[in-house]
Structures are given as C-alpha cells and as structure tokens.
Image (cartoon, rainbow, N blue to C red; front, side, top):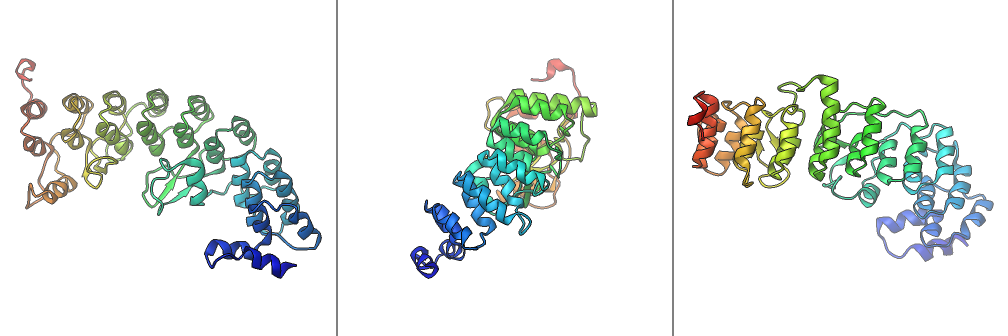
Length: 357
C-alpha cells in the first residue's frame, strides 16, 4: 500500500511535495484523508513533528492528540507549542507545557509568521524574526489562550528589544501594541515588563495609536524619571517615523524621552538616508514641519552638530562634497525656507523673542 501512497502524492519534483512524500502522515492530513492516520499508527508507522504541525494548522485536534501521544519524548516538539497557541488548542497546550516543551523557545518559522501576523510586523522576508510563546499568544488575539499562557511560569520579558535589522525580536509588549490591545499593554507593564522597548514604541508610532503610546511613555517616565540618555538611541526610529508621517502629537509625546540626535534610517521617503530627528523634520513634507522642529529644539535637540550620515545623504544627492562638516543649520539653509532658518538662528544665537518668526 505504501508505495502506491507515495506515488499518489508525488505530483512533481518540488521541495514541498518531496517533504510530503517522506511523511505520509503530513500528506494525509494536508489532503483531508485523516482516516488514514489511525491506520498508519496502528501499523506502527512513526509520524514526524511536521505531521503534528499539519494537524494543528488544519485544526484536527483529535488527530494531533493521537500523534502527540506517539511523539512525546521521542523528538523535539518545541515549535508545536506555538502552533497549538496560534490555533487555540488548549488541551495540547497544557500537555506540551506539562512536559516543559517549547515554553521558553522562540519561534522563527517565517512562512507561518507572515500568514498569521501579517507583513506589517514582518516586512522583509530575509529577516529572521524571533517570537516568544507569549507573543505568539497575544498575536493570535485569543484572550482565553493569553490568560492560559500567563498562568504558566513563562518569561514576560525574555529577550532583546532593540531594533536590530538582521534579527528582529517581537516582545510580548510589541505584540500587544501591534494588535492594539491597550488592556494587555497595561497588564504587561503592571506585571513588570520593561516599558523601555524600542520596537514596541516604534510599533505604536507605525500604527498611530496615541493611547497605547501614551501608556508606554508614562511607564517609561515613571521608571526612568525622564529621558533615556543621549547616545542611547532609544526612540530614535520611533520619533523619525512620527516626523515622516507628520504626526505632531506623537512627536511631542516622544521628544522628552527619545534620543533625537541619533541618525537612523527612515521607513517612508528617503528610507536609505540616515538622518537625525531635526534633519528629518527639515525635509519633511508636512505643513507643520516648523512646529515639529520647534518641539525638538524645546526638548533639547542639538541644532549645531556635524553628522557623517547627514553629509552622506546630501552628497549622494549632489548637494555637497568635501569634508563631513554638514550641520542641521546648513541643511536648513538648503531649503531656502526663511522661517526654518530663523528657527535655527533663534536656538543658536539667542535673541529677544519678538525678533523671532
């Protein structure tokens, strides 16, 4: 019977079909022939971890449970916990957690992440994205499963929350921000999650959720009594995102705690340009860019620094060459906008306010 079974499912030489040939359990579940699974188990055939994954994603929980009974203790089922969480298989979650399988292991299967989380959270296919199991639960938006996971002994803040471009990390706080769950954001912070999460605050800016951003920023202020510190890079991408979107309320909220002098890449126009917050505001197309510049200066942005990244961007456009001595003031002058130039001069050369535009 097995050779016929294999030949039936070997439609082409693609990698996907070869995988299903090697595991007839996966092929049976994928194609809806679940009646074959008990027969193969009785015959002594051993399923793979992929068969358990397929059963979970197809929501064949009885089949998944019978496969899990065979696999328990035989192979690594760490990814299966994430699949069980995604589809809300409470019984299988309890079984896996009882054996401590996968509870502290991050999830990195990009195809499944994109299908369930969406491309806005995982924008570029070549980046590996690490997701702890609590984040998976929050992203599933199944409150019953989230509450179940919180009842277990799992890490609430288990990894790096920087915005490294090669290995992104989706913390539980970031996941809660992404799905717009204010109650979960406040609960995580109340449970002791560190609110100084670069990606979470960046996600709040991307989604434009002011209420959630305010909750995180208030927690940061309470934890650190204000600014994170110059040179830390904290909030740099978030405030640039807010500037590029012309979200002046978000800029005003972020300015007290963000590192405004850190040059970062943008997400919208000039995405390859490394610019500080002030320089990004100078070249913003928002009608309120002058207001944004004034907000940045009011909260201590450096108006007279030199930046290799700013110089590189300008020289790439053919505006400047030579030494990297381009300051935000010179960049402002290139706009020929007297209101912006006057705003800079008022900061660099203090004068009576009645002479400032």
